[in-house]
Length: 154
Image (cartoon, rainbow, N blue to C red; front, side, top):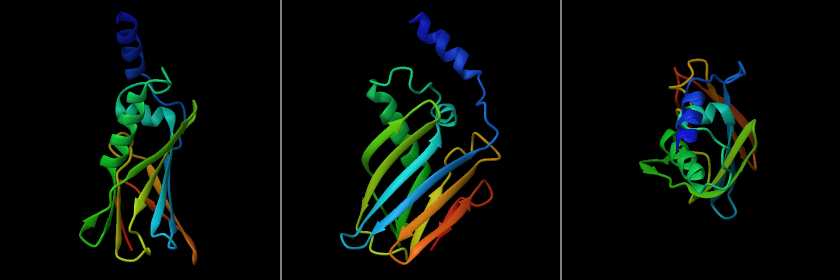
């Protein structure tokens, strides 16, 4: 217990060691089955600051996955019209540098009348930029959201 408290205190005062503040959210539309694959890539140390606990301390602890999934769902919302889409957890991979989490969305036919809200890491880092990459059969588009613009409307 004491060791965990010391680890938490030491980590609480640590600062991520990189100057770049980016997250990448790739949304790949599969119009054939009306689904979208949503993949988030974040720096592991930045994400640990956001959820306020060290990641990878015990990779077998599934609570870390639950905390990360909850954080991402709270800070990224995708709506079509008035209906907010539900994220279905798909997978997670992580190492000391990058944390990657994937979800599946259903009933997405096209990127029209879609609103994407993304505030991931914006409260923690004033220079954070969230890249949204949309992939569909017509091609690819990229957008950048930040503290002054958290919503992408298509």
